[in-house]
Image 1 (cartoon, rainbow, N blue to C red):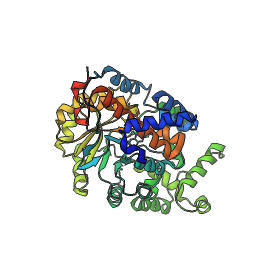
Image 2 (cartoon, helix red, strand yellow):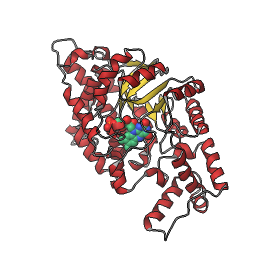
Image 3 (tube, rainbow, N blue to C red):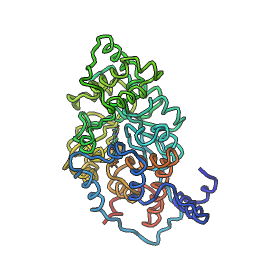
Length: 427
Ligand SMILES: Cc1cc2nc3c(=O)[nH]c(=O)nc-3n(C[C@H](O)[C@H](O)[C@H](O)COP(=O)(O)O)c2cc1C
């Protein structure tokens, strides 16, 4: 944050920062145009990382539907209203936030940048945007919390089939002062992700994105038991160069000394154990009561796409709903997430906050989501592009650009507060 900002509304400040730098021949290192951001972000990643971030389920038609749903709604700007003072602050779960943005939980960020979640934490903090820490992060949540300092975070839970791991994750989230638990409902199995399948590439099988697990005492106990039982698959045939690279990746990603890890069965046992315990496919709504009994933290469910499921979520006492289709990575041929939002908001009727993600690419998209009744939004792939381009600074810039564009959208459409962005602003 810079002192010069105090006098200017956020959008004007960022805009003038960019144009002033332009006088000296400098352009923004992170593009403001969504397509240019995506192109540069993908270019900055390895081919495997690019595919991992880009892939949807199947033919990718849900990702297309996510974008098409945004195109269906058009904004009607209003003129000659005093927009000299604009305020995009909101109150969410009792906390005042300077803007309605959060970072969506995204796993295996080490594929985009070596500092991964630590860089996201620093970038999100600098942009005053709460971070939702992923179960599949590349660093343990305690280290991410260290990078966040006193900046707010939530913890996203993938519900393991091992109750000890679920409870341990929740206790650790409480210990780092996470302010809510987000249970992701849509990924009890991984979707049919064609770009990853055609590359035969699953990052977890190479020891990536499992740091929450390898740093967890309950998970470590399971690994010890597996090692003691000598329960590891034996590789068949001569080792290939890829097999050696995978083993090195697994070894490097396991906590502790690399040379010790090379001689140990633990890194391979950890990967195998993770693949066994990742999720519970028999999870039902009734199980939310277990989580409710476990923690006083607010519980949000992520992945709701139907009005009936929103009703069930409310009946089971959730504190918030995140309307999301996981960026089209789980179900091919599904409805656009924004179409789901329009059905769900009236059902929830303001009883708990409704958040949204899937397909948001710019500030105008955020505006439409708010106009359709969401309380806040989660930014997904765009911040990963910023991370790949410029680490923590890239994440900060992407989030600042969203906030700046939203501010200027407010000015150019004649609203001065988030509450005023309602259905009446749409055609
Ligand atoms: C590479 C990648 C990894 C993701 N990892 C997780 C995760 O660990 N947990 C989770 O709940 N959602 C995860 N998501 C889904 C995001 O939280 C969010 O729902 C999605 O990115 C929204 O779609 P969009 O990025 O196209 O806007 C992931 C998404 C991507 C693209």
